Image 1 (cartoon, rainbow, N blue to C red):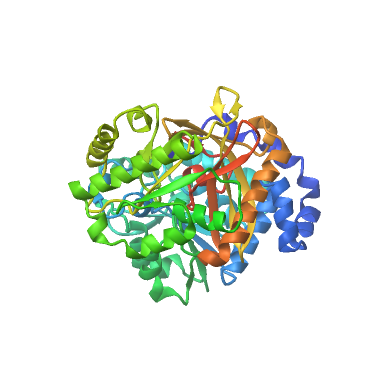
Image 2 (cartoon, rainbow, N blue to C red):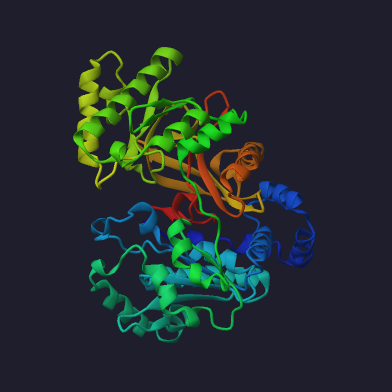
Length: 492
């Protein structure tokens, strides 16, 4: 889970904010006059500059039908857990959107409202309000923001007001929630909360911008009846194979070599092959049966062998091209047998088949796995790979940078993150950061029309290789966690 850092380091930004106070008004006026290209260029140099974030938030509001307010919630279960409600039995505290909501709300006339399933604990909320106060001091105005929670009686409570007016009652509320059954949560909770209390949440507001954790067709369908009052971002696409092959077809070179393995056994190396295979895939191929798993596993092993035999490259497997979690990543350290091309192929296929059978729940297999070259990245302090998350917003097909974070992994799964407003803090240079932002800007230029993705979050992961090349390796086009468009966030 991702939580707000509650130690004193969070609040040490006071000098940095105050040092710019005398120039704030002229600074904001200057940024408001910049063209989209000029503002994006400014953001590449100063992505964490608060005045830049305020101006970007203002332009986000304007892009989404000049929305008056932001409505933000973390419906992470829709994206990660789909229709498997049994998997969320112990999921608590995931709906933490406070930090992105804080700076985004500065650009909306009526501020922002955060819909939560679980009330934040008092320590977390106290630290958040101190940070909010610091930002208000810098801006010399109030940031209008509410945290809305539906209590056991079905009434909507505004938690900031309750916490400030009656801390004891707020603590009691948290204790009561902790005693609830987690089975009361379900993936569409936040969407249904918005629908149940629509008039309260949108009172005195002409139009609201709704910003889910990961924009999906499900959100679009559920909220279609409110299209005269709500604006939504474009539906994101996190299919790694599709991104890779589209970019490759357009001459983009900052990519690792990759072969996709389709569920029906085909191996894919071009966008033409990808679209052809995807059209013919159906549930006959993806039904979770022992025979289909064997076909899928055999294709993956063949792709590993092709990378080795044709290109002399070691491989890394991700079982689901569209997967969001580390569950689908198969680290060579954990699964060496599938990468050992000297071993008997049938033995390797059998091992992978058994692993998929044990790991994969649900009725369907992934449509595609990806087998890419194993990158040897540069190292940062503490023997951390030069593995970065790059994030920003796309507005009218233009990429506006917001953050770069250094990520730590364990066996292919992300376990930690370092985020700073300064490249030097991560032992990087401004030139390196601008190269990463420029790479993402180019990707948007090449993809926007093909994907129809003109307005929304854009984020992903890339490596800096030992010889200084950038290799884009994954897409995480969703808000929160590693791909959060904010600074000052820490992952467990």
